[in-house]
Length: 464
Image (cartoon, rainbow, N blue to C red; front, top):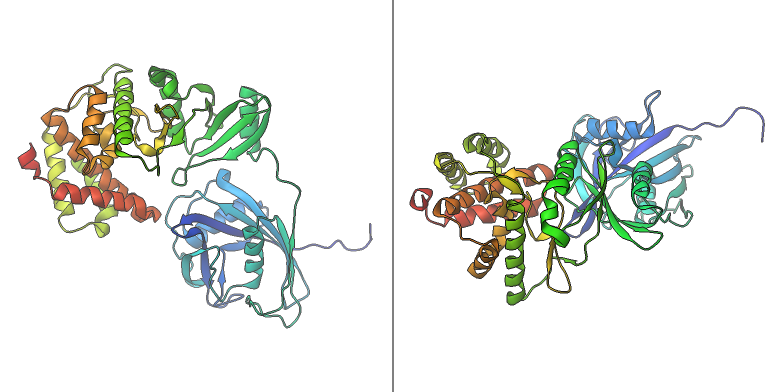
């Protein structure tokens, strides 16, 4: 060890806020402006540590200050470390890049004196001009490597130039760990099922919850799920302990639950996800019939309860605030009319429901059987409300609707038919508001399709 003064370097944090775009993964970039370093160049949201602040707290704080998004520390993942020396000055610095895939809020420019642009860009089509330091970190990130050295020389440009000097040295790391799980989650899972040999994250892109497929050292397979909040954890655990057993082998079984980590371990089901699967007409009819049977069993798995829901008009009005700019002509009038009709209908009894009954949460087994999973939205609700998401598949397919109701064991009454239309409209405006806030065009478009279908149907007074 050499003597003398120890070498110290400042530490930067960089936010790789990532989402899945139409053409692949995208990251959020901002353009520097004003009297700041690298003004006019694109860069990741970033900043320095405050005195006494740890790196994770710093990237969460910088995200809020620069973009307005709210990030939980549990959703912050270390991605890349870069040792950087700028072309001006002799000092170097350490930049730590953190990946985040779950957040709340819509990114926007929050510091206009330092940033004059912000947008999502494909990882394989980054904009120019970009800060060379930031580009070095993203090059390592795109390559799946843990670190890089980026030592620029005097006279090098601050901006990245494809035809300029290549100062980036990408560093490989040790082989990937067999179990890429958060430490506490792994500890909980291994207490439940024994030593884990492999783990693969299989989280759904729109869900704030995280899911891993875990394989034990003896070959057994389970799923570990870390919920995005207490409400979702409590709902799913309660459903597994009370209603889900009525579905038998067509649903997972709860192995263990941890209220502190808000996590569960459940048994694995066999089958392929119905979401995105191309089915022939006869197979899809059988699938709908099976889903009808599962919905019926679930709705009968607990005692009915009286309804104590707030008036529909208040809920619709709240969602309209976030969706109004994305609605077509006549949508708002339709929604308010349906809310008035719904509030005048006899109150439905409430039954145990799945809460998100759709192809995304169902599997088709090799023997043609259908299995159901993901009960984090389970709660008491109207039977027709539980059919809303699935009814989107019935548009133009009366055979699928008939197959579901045949499996369900009875037709809907005229009042239930009208209630289903109303609840489909309310779910649609909620989805449009969510899509506008979270930049999710697929959810918003699904809502617009539903409202178009209802606008071209007979009016609510005619259906009453």
